[in-house]
Amino acid sequence: MNDVRHVLVLPDRDAAEEVARELPDRFGAAEEPQLVRDALAGEDDAEDAQWLVVVEDPDGRFDPSALDALAAEYEGWLEAP
Image (cartoon, rainbow, N blue to C red; front, top):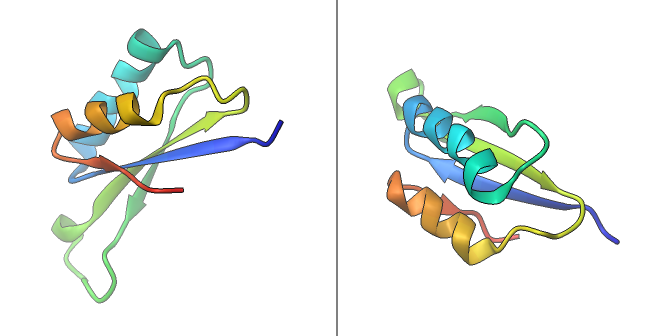
């Protein structure tokens, strides 16, 4: 089976950390999600950086619409594969 990686885009680090904490409770995510700072192109101001929560899903167990709904609670979204 192909490895699946879900990328949730969040507006700031606090939101990303909250989502990362929610994942194991809601989805039973075994692996720790990876937080990645994503500076917007052409922006020098660190305040304009988005944060990504990268979730490895080797078994394809996570429902993309549920992940999108979780991200939406924090004003974010699930990046389309």
